[in-house]
Image (cartoon, rainbow, N blue to C red; front, side, top):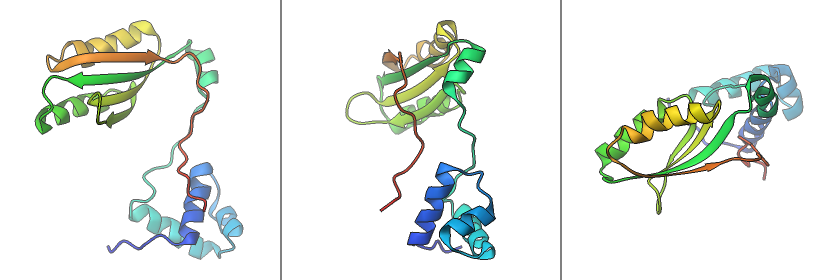
Length: 161
């Protein structure tokens, strides 16, 4: 399937969906001044072409922390001894397989990876660190920054022009 370029209506549709994916097709169509069938066709095309990766619920971290225990958020820098593609891919595969790793980035310059980690508590983080960092002979340095307050969290891409 040939991928179409995004027009202004597509961008508005993506913006609405990223803000509230629970909007009905009728509500989306009304906001964009489209017919519901046209709106539905556009949404399906955006999904088929991979512009919409998935629909998720964003959970309230403060309420979950209170209900399940405090929770521990960390930004972790990881440097490897050997940075060949095979070693980078091996570490990346192990990192993304961990549920506690919410985000994983290969970065340059500086460390090789930056991870965003959410653990239940410090013992949970230490168990992750043991599995992911300590047991890997290629991990040279790990620097963790523990969050004391989340000032902002967003998954929005700035699409409005």
